[in-house]
Each structure stands twice: as structure tokens, then as C-alpha cells.
Image 1 (tube, protein in one colour):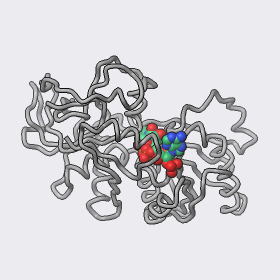
Image 2 (cartoon, rainbow, N blue to C red; image 1 turned 90 degrees about the vertical axis):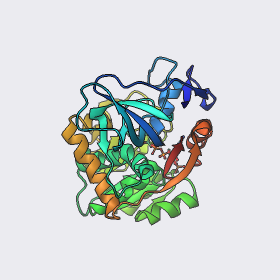
Image 3 (cartoon, rainbow, N blue to C red; image 1 turned 60 degrees about the vertical axis):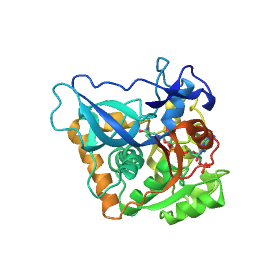
Length: 320
Ligand code: NDP
């Protein structure tokens, strides 16, 4: 099969197309023929070595496709089933082996491309808005990188929950997309905290969803109302330096959390509940997906260059 292999950590150039043996499903595993593989910022952290993984490895941890074979002891998933998964490495390939209990069924009315485009980021946006901080009607929330994969979903879901959304973006085209997704106010990154104060009559926002990290962290804290929550869920601009928790006190008894999807899909029930909420919104037309760019699998390098170069909007897919 065709796959992308990382033989050493580094820049996008270490994403090398290669021919590999088809993987074989072991006990409890299924073999999936991929229709699409989702590109996520976490793939950059694995590629660079910020997140550790022994080399060589096939990167990517989100995909959807058709079950080709099942290993010993697998029940509830059968050859021919349409499934999606996230959180297991190996999706930058034509075939992948995944534990059966990590797969979720794809409803008949959802294309496999849309299933791959929405599972990881959709469930993340779901837990951030429903569990990390449960957005309430009337809240004002700040969403960084509002035209990104996460940003467009967070914006729409916060609006579904009745919030007023302020978004940050870097270009007019990204502003247009974020507004289409429902953002009420858009600001640039320079001096965004004072803009947020102005737009909230001095009060600050209930929650900041910050996947940008180093470049926005201080301003995000400055944007919160008393007892507000900073959900620092990523580091697209780099890791936040060591931090003195005492800073949370004068700033308003703030809450700081660094959440990750694995801890919000701890049981199979929780995984299926979040996945079906996301797929349900898409089926009802309440959540619109924006796949900004599709690449051939062999062009994974270009996909990462575009993602890190801030040239993408919405979701990126690799097509095997
Ligand atoms: P995006 O589509 O949001 O792409 C990243 C965006 O970040 C860029 O388009 C850019 O938007 C903005 N950005 C700001 N500064 C920089 C910079 N210096 N370098 C690169 N980008 C920058 O990516 P994803 O939706 O895949 O991921 C967004 C974040 O969410 C990542 O940090 C990711 O790790 C995190 N994440 C966390 C999860 C979790 O459970 N914790 C799960 C899923 C994602 P602009 O040009 O408008 O500034």
C-alpha cells in the first residue's frame, strides 16, 4: 500500500511517500481501507518530535473508510462497515489497523470524507464547549484562529449554545469565513485583549478557547472576566513558557486548563456520545463543514507546509 513514513523527526520534508506491506489486524483490531485521512495540528507535533514517537512511523490519527477485515475476537464491527476513528496513529496511508473499540460507525447519510473531516476536531469542539466550560446563553466567548479547523467548529457550536462569539484571525478572507460561521465580532491578533475589553464593556469573556498558545497566552488571560476559564487546548505558535499560578489570582480568580480529547473520551459510551452528537449536527445541517483543502496522500508534505504557514482554512484532508 501507499503510505507516508516519518524516518526521523524534522520539518515537513520528513514526510516521505513510501510503499509498505499491508498491516494485518491482530486480536481486537480491524483493517480499514481509507477513503480520507484528516490532517490535524497534532500531526505536526508528532512529526517534529514535540510529541514522542519511535521512528519510523506512519503519521496521522484520523480517518474514515470501509472495514476490509477483522481480527480475532472482534464483535460488533464487520467487513463492509463504514467506520471512522481518531487517536490511533497510522492514517496517512491507504490502509490502517485500528482497535475495534476505537472505531465509530458512520451514519448512512454522511459521506466518508465528511466523517473523516469532522471526528477529531468536532469531538474536541464538543467537549470544549460542553464539558471543559459549558457555554451558556448570553456568554461572550473568545475563539482564537476562528477560521481554522477547530475555530470554525467552535464558533458554530458556541453559537448553537447561545453565545456571542469574538474571533481572532489573520486575514480578511479568514474574517469572511469566521463571520459566515457565525462570529459576531472579529479582531486581529495585535492588541486583541484591549479590543475584547472594549467589546465587552470592560467585563471580559467567560471563556477563551486558545489553540494558538505562546503568542496569545498572556492576552488570553487578560481577556477573561472574573472567574473566567482559559481553555489552552493547543500550541500552534509554540509552547507556553513556565507559568506562575499566582498570576491567576489578581487577574480574577481565573481557571486555567490544558485539556486533551483522550481524557474526554475515556469510555466507549463517552466516545460514541460525542461522535453521534457531532455527526447528528452535520446531518441536521446545524454544523457546516468547511474542507478548505484536499491533497493527494503523496502531498502530505505540502499539507503540513500550508498548515504551519497559516495558509489553510477549515479542515485539510489527504486522499489515498
Ligand atoms: P488550524 O486550522 O487552527 O491551523 C492553525 C491556525 O492557527 C492557523 O491557520 C493560524 O490561523 C493560527 N496561528 C496563529 N499563530 C500561528 C503560528 N505562529 N503558526 C501557525 N498557526 C498559527 O489547526 P487545527 O484546527 O488542526 O488545530 C488548532 C489547534 O487545536 C492546534 O493547536 C491543535 O493542536 C489544537 N487541538 C487540540 C486538541 C485537544 O484535544 N487538545 C484536539 C484538536 C486540536 P490565523 O492565520 O487566523 O492566525
